[in-house]
Image (cartoon, rainbow, N blue to C red; front, side, top):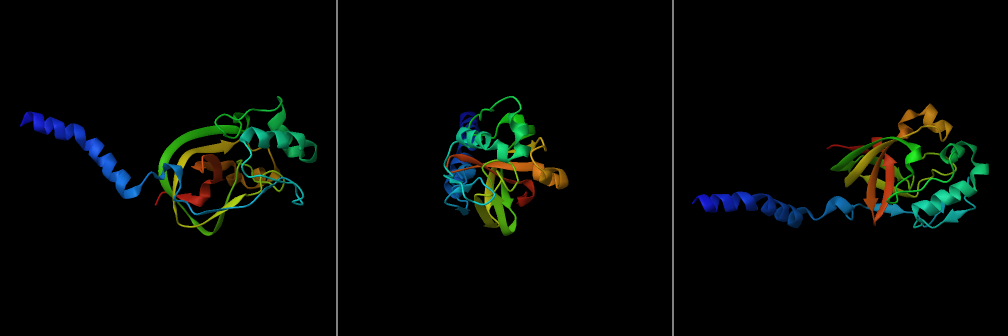
Length: 183
């Protein structure tokens, strides 16, 4: 009897994980998320330069660096040269705080919530490349706070410094923290 109870106790977490996986699927990749991705990523104010949304993080940073003469606020990102992305994440030089979340939350998008490749809100480099609409489950990887010295929007509206990062189609994307709720 003791062995049966021990076996059941050991199998319990495994059984719960299997039942959970069968019932809900693996939502950590956000494959369930209905996200409207644009066909290109605009880097210029007049939309004349449009890049593939599937460029790597380092390629996007390089484009920002090449165009920094047109975007004076972004020079703060390049004070020590061209920063590198780690695991396709926005360069650490632009982040003051990072907190692991690893939790299923919900979008709160009565009007479309903007999704970005970088946690920057500006008319130059921080244009959204996708939208999420309605209440949807979203698995959040982590929360970040940017340095706040990329543009005047971050100074005038401090909530543009608070972002959630999530995976979608094997890429990291960002949405403003206020677009996501616990329940």
